[in-house]
Length: 275
DNA sequence: CGCGCCTCCTGTGTGC
DNA sequence: TGCACACAGGAGGCGC
Image 1 (cartoon, helix red, strand yellow):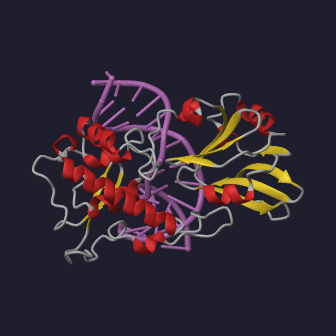
Image 2 (image 1 turned 90 degrees about the horizontal axis):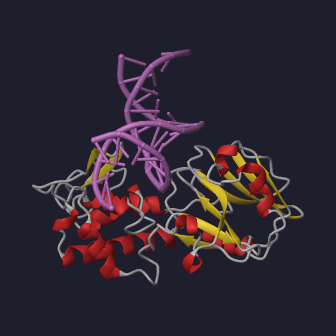
Image 3 (image 1 turned 30 degrees about the horizontal axis):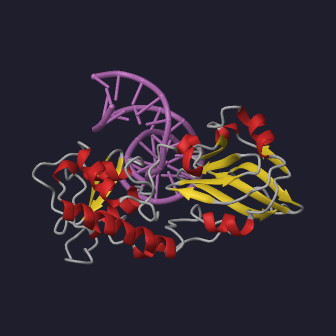
């Protein structure tokens, strides 16, 4: 998504903005009209990402911050294209081209934010670097993990420990690292923390190469194209199917009002479990 | 202060 | 056939 914005949006000026659903800009403190006023007339200088947040630094000194939530899309569309059913915000870039925020479930949203330290909007200063970031601190990650008093998957989903990891990539990385999701973080040995970090990087890099994980038409890039990483999933969504490593049937457990997928052979539940 | 539960939202699939 | 409900889940707020 970020690469698509870099190719199609960076260097353009926003000629106009239309907020069609106020909830899509609920994190913008000034409200929908202020949002539209703050993006209109601004040129887009870059396309940046930290974890699951994307932002476009503007020549006004502020940034247009986006989170896609579960179902959000940023689409570059000709203005002549019919409005999508769940079109929430329309930005007119130049004659005939629009950047559209489309979001069925409206968990995502846009806002205009002042910058903070490290060229990151102050609003997301609490979001850690993601494991593919060149400045990610491996040793600090291991320390932060061990300091937590919770299960390892809960810690992975906490974006202040490391970012960019959601339910799918957590399950895939834990399987590769042969760790159960309920393993207490404080019992992780240094070698296990290193194995987990390496697995996270493998999964995230492979998913990026594949263009992301697209279960249906909701998960697309700015051109509306799906990724194909779901074909490479080892455990997620594969309840009852044989484990690629040992052949035992994969299991699904309820976890935090969602699901965790594990191999009972490769990832035995720890005697002391936290979840 | 830190952990963990709850809520927001809508479309799809399933079971009765 | 139609209704009810489970499920998908990121993240912030808040209770303990």
